[in-house]
Length: 207
Image (cartoon, rainbow, N blue to C red; front, side, top):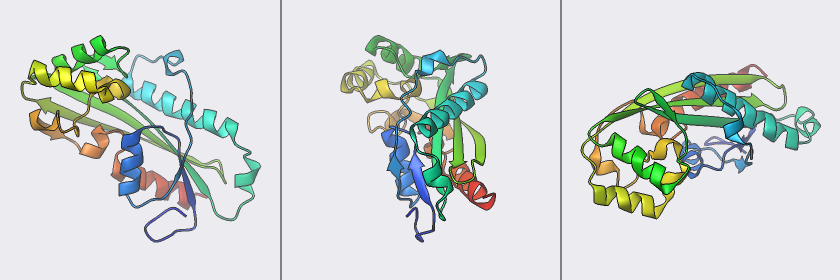
């Protein structure tokens, strides 16, 4: 079952991100989880929009390759696979997950009294029909000065090592220093609700 009103389709979230799990659950959906386990560093693009889309495509393809796809094509109810990716853009450079604590510290210090943009992709693949719907979403975050002590606490806690750009606007240590946002919190967290809902409906309507 997938949702609020128990619609006749299932969802697989192709992500190990706790933020994406939380957002999709907040949207009222029930779902199973599969991780793509791809080497993201093997996929390189100069433009952030192209990179996040290529990575979400690769995640979808990797998960589908693990499935017995005829189990989904022959069922009456469709199953939707949701994959997503996100990068942070700061100073004109693409930032993915920090490779070390030192890099995470450097990233967060760079946001202090400055701003960062997020570029994210969402792909919904209907496993029954192979139809694939795609979308991009962008947001910006402006920060007050982030004290060094707060940065150290964030780095030592470790969650920032597992998100693009080490950017955790929803974290209780970070949120007091967010000055303004252009876009939604769920977009910055990696799964924009409005876009995801639209792609789910599109993938179902074109089945």
